[in-house]
Amino acid sequence: MTKYFFILAFTISIFSAKSQIINDSILIEGHYRTFHFLKPAKANASVIFVLHGSGGNGLQNRNGAKKLEAIAPTENILLVYPDGYKKFWNECRKTANSAANLENINENAFFGSMLGYFKEHYQIDDKKVFAVGTSGGGHMAYKLGLTMPEKFRAITAIIANLPDTNNLDCVEKHVSIPVMIINGTIDKVNPYEGGEVIIQNNLSLGFVRSTNRTFEYWSSLAGYKGNPKMENMLDNDPNDGKTIERYTFKEQNKPEVTLLKVIGGKHDYPNDIDVYLEAWEFFKRQMK
Image 1 (cartoon, one colour):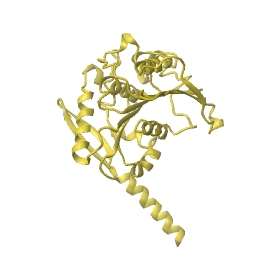
Image 2 (image 1 turned 90 degrees about the vertical axis):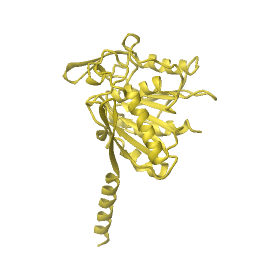
Image 3 (image 1 turned 60 degrees about the vertical axis):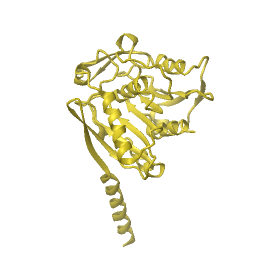
């Protein structure tokens, strides 16, 4: 009897956690922009935008972020899964052929309005706002750092490099913020050494810089010179064929800039770490 009660209670707890998701939308320049979120435990919560890749949607990221969802109540995080416009973001790649880019969708207004919504309804701490994005979502995270640095405490971009200089159409504010990059060395979609990004259906999203140039952009903006601190992270899954090197610039009164170089990593997540928990640990360091 006890065994079956435990199974039933466990099933109910999973159902309850999943049922907490709230769906809403905001009208931005004639378009209803949708987003999904988990309410925080109390006021003054941190906000983390979890940004999906090109061709996806917000809710598809929930499974990957389930460990972050599990700690969200105790860490008082308001987790947000926004949807791109027609499954894409209008980020900073000038030659991207998505509808979001071609129609020049106003992403800054969307994110600014979501923050206003959460401030009004949930009394968030607007000094603790973060974004973590994968692939095209990583590019959107870069855009938030480039164009809205006053609104975001820190960002994390996963399997994404900055657009090359001739493929960048965002107006940069040149304000340094903490940035963490997680990229794989044999990624054929987001080339580690830079080049053209081609996704499904042979859709080109233009040329990107190398990971080293991307890392250098943010570290130079923060005022760092010389070499970062390098350390090998634990190889928690020897069978996945990947290892991770961590490169960090961190000094007092300067934003932290960190690169996790996934040796053998493709356009995917490494098994050695949970990228969302790693992002949260990075974000927490910026609040100290």
